[in-house]
Image 1: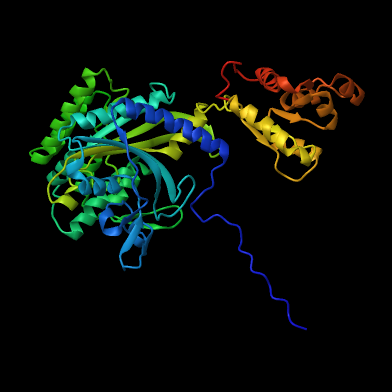
Image 2 (image 1 turned 60 degrees about the horizontal axis):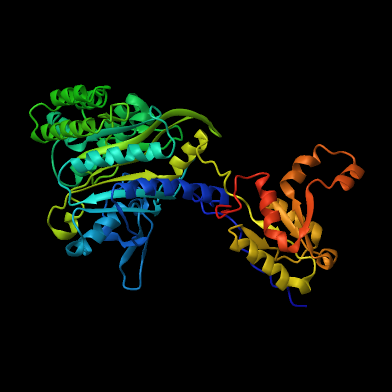
Length: 506
């Protein structure tokens, strides 16, 4: 007897570092993105969509985790033996797009874009390999007025999402100031080895909030071993150099001018450092004129940003409140950032094209808004479900669904193969407010029965006697077939703020 061949069944499993997103989260996230989009549009930015894939050489090597396999990106080789990579952010593809279409663009070119990006990083709690960003960028704007505008717009976005003043701050620094501090500390040079050391210094400072001064000091020195035992190679600086950098990161104050004065002392005679301080003073003048105080936009030397392409002002949107989450009491910290990148488009065109931008980390901001209770979905009403009592009457049931939809009421026809009890249970799982029933008796009487599932659920805990339930039928109502729409709207109005004239939002 032949042995029965075993059928291969793949295991249903989600790849590590990725996530599935359910309907309620998708809907709330889209509401959040819509509010951000309104602010971007208000500032005159235009939408753009770029490809998820780019040629690997077009993306460049700017990720902060260049020691990872594939240098932090997911790549493959196509039929022409060219390497393609999933975009790791939305800025590098924008640089390619601008270079490719430069002559036809109105300049300065102002664009916004939202979409997923991918990074080949070690996943962890709240750290995914795929996540969504929402960017705004200004291309061919040489002055720091564009950077100041980005900071003000980012602050406006956070307030538009319901985050009160005092619960967030835009933290601003300038890469030129850091370069000046490194120069006065004797950390200068060129070539691949210096580039690696320079990037290691920036990455170390970027972890100040998480690791504290002692942890950063080790990363600036020989290196650091984390709690898991993983070792991170350090920048191998001398103690005097480390002291100067740590002093720089800790010279922040509430007074923006005082921060600039402290920075000016630390950069000494460095020309690039002095240029960075002058740019920060100009940003201060611009945001002060628009009445953005230091409680909204502050200067913080500890902000450096991890990406390697920034050349001037850099900024981060930080949430300062604490909230109770599944992990306990959490201070959310940075939910977005950006800065000036004047050399990125030059890689394609051979000429310097000034640019600046800001990127919101959508998932992290969503989690923060959820903790604040700012993602209310009470106005999203689940569909009314029309039950199928007699399969030969499907055209009539479908007509009911169409009539409801024509009035802006979310509705669906039950398309499974189960009986009435299972259909009602399905509607309950869908959080449906109402089911519409038309059996033979209702059809002969020219009526439909409307069952209020919300009220029924509320009353089920109050009425204990089955006889009382049958006699009262408080959540069930028969209406003439011609009054289906009015009956459904009246029943919905028990629980939701809708009007008979316009229920399109339901």
